[in-house]
Length: 83
Image (cartoon, rainbow, N blue to C red; front, side, top):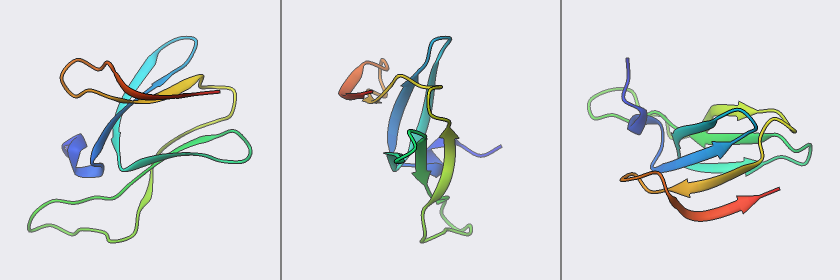
């Protein structure tokens, strides 16, 4: 199993009605359809590293409420975006 930090440089939290998801990704993007996409890229010393970002997580429109950059220490919001 690979370490989550190999897939992104930032720690994010995504909220929905039922749970809060934590993930590592380089950036999050809201598509015109309302879907939320987390972009990242695999990186680890002495192992294959991609130079092109790819989707590390996606969630459909209506299945998420808010996302925010989170503190790696306690998960609290560093910056916030909501729909």
